[in-house]
Length: 201
Image (cartoon, rainbow, N blue to C red; front, side, top):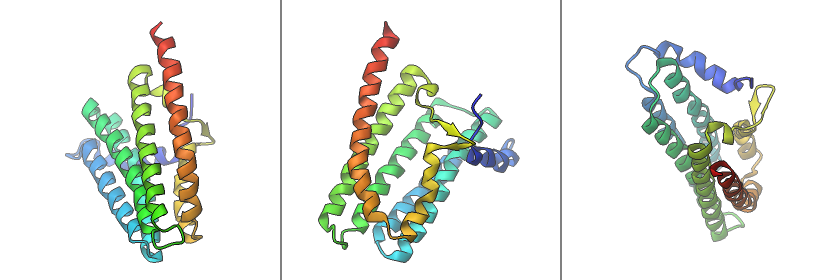
């Protein structure tokens, strides 16, 4: 059995006191969504201080993403709508993350290309989230489960985002996303189309 990631374990302990309270998982999803949107707005400002604040808020939002699911399992308040709300919030935040980075970098040497790169990356991320959701609907959540190494998921690399901003690495990060995200989106579509027919046979 795969060990639960460290951030999910921490989220579990933090939400345990809320098990029998009036707080439900959708409240935590909303807090995560608002925090993420404030983070993307700060990144769009573009100044060094706001970019670093945005990176910190994004990390917080990324961690909060675990709390709604843990509370849902603890309290038995899971719902299909809540799951869809969580997925939509994930998609919105990550799309606006790259658009915000691109907008904030328009005063850099990338110019208006930065915004275009942010949009390309954001749209690609939207495609990834869409096809990931389709795979979960058709094949179950295990079909999109990520490898876990010593309690860390691949996506935990996002916790290093403040390091990127502190080292002024947003430009190469955006360039990498502009190249990598579309490729990964195409791979996800190919994986979906190759798995679904075999499932239906």
